[in-house]
Length: 325
Figure 1 (cartoon, rainbow, N blue to C red):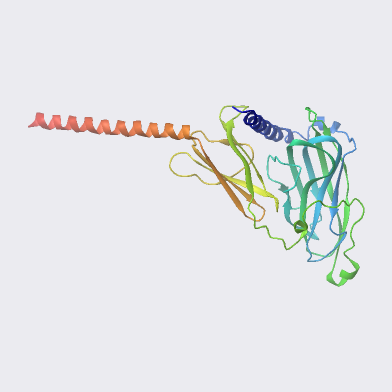
Figure 2: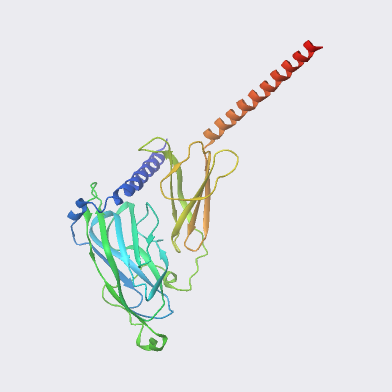
């Protein structure tokens, strides 16, 4: 086994443990322990294309993080005014968060909850969490910002930190007020290090995502097998994953899955499909030939048993006929 192969295996194990720990850690974020979270200078803020937008003209908002200490887990709830804005899509293609225990939660009252972590810790400025794309649906004013936010220090203990979170006012003008609108925001604005097409309301992603990791490994916490996987999509971000398994001859039904996913006992083929936010897909299949061979052996034994039973029955029947004659 080469040194590089060993590194890949250890990296996969790290991602498995990280994903499993994220599922458990986010389920207890409301416990009294997390009331002790402190602010160590981290800041969570927004950049907007426009402080004053125009009705029917789409715009985007980027959630950014500055932190002087290394962090690797995030639990952020953002809210926007639903009376004047409609969320059209969430772009996580350049997000710090690479492991999510579930889908991005979107509630009717405008709250969006983004939870997850990353195998590599981040510290610095302008770390991108997500890009939110909006369509103005009415004129008026409101505020968008953070309802709650907790990030976790990458110190081996997951020390919770509460970053300073900024609120941003937004004004939606009518088309008749367009000349007076479209004033670019200056406070807390950081140039986006991304391609201009990501802010283009007419942008259409035609490039499929790319599955970069798909591996079946032993579950480190209980018996059974786990599928770990990752995909990237530089254009619009990965929306979700679909998976189906083959236990005998035919593939089962598709189901939405999250990383990591427990593989059903007896599955010998696993097909994973990554879907981006425009519906483009990338599919990869891996086979567990050991399980397939055992199924073939079982089928051969079963067929041999049936054949022998039929031969024995035919012999017995012939013997009975000979006795009767």
